Length: 338
Image 1 (tube, rainbow, N blue to C red):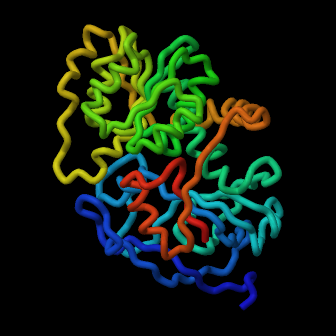
Image 2: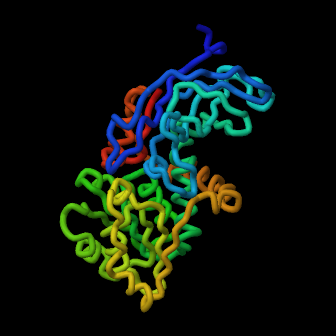
Image 3: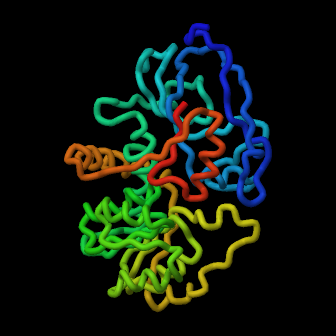
């Protein structure tokens, strides 16, 4: 079958909504029909797709900043691939693009929903990570939501993950006096030190507040929260006056069946004059993205930013890759090669 005349492809569907931690039974791989290309559309052979923590929330039938996945329908998310057929003058065949129709081997989409990427600057997967949503989330959250400034001491949880590892490096480049990270294994802690973190700890080694206090005796000014729960409570304990929290994620509670308790020490925010700000990157996309792209391109050219990737191979491995990511099996960004 000619790749330019594909009539169907395989896609991962949501078979049922998870109750607690998702299992592979919540997913189903099915054949789907590919429509004929209309004017202005492209057919993409996906090469790499992303699995991300925010997708867990979309598996619940609740109102949020992004619509929930529908049972019986294909999932979607970030992917990069090659255009193998085109009816768009702006994106001819052979170009590499990034788009949001992942979780499938091929995708038909409007050219306006894809962005051409330059594979001479960085490999395709980087546009799902350091040059994509991951890097932008780290930058916008740190510089806008947390209002980080030179001289701040910065703590980031989930620091060996895709966003967290970027946050720590960016904080150093932006003039932080001390960068601290938490992670779930000793190997990840060692990797954070390789990436330039001033201190890091394994949160399994004791109460998070005690561990943070040992490596931040002078307190912290910024907390970039990817975890929530005991990490947020610990950060509130050690934030200095006028400290700021950028609330990016709360992976520790995504699979919770019961609503989590709020941090028990939230009252400290009053006397310390703390700012806790939740954010999604859509708020900053138009204003901040050009600034981010310019600075990140320079940092990459100077070899000042490094990133890790953890791979699974094949669409059949995508559900398990997602489950493994939620359980912390990845260092850096979890990706699926298609």
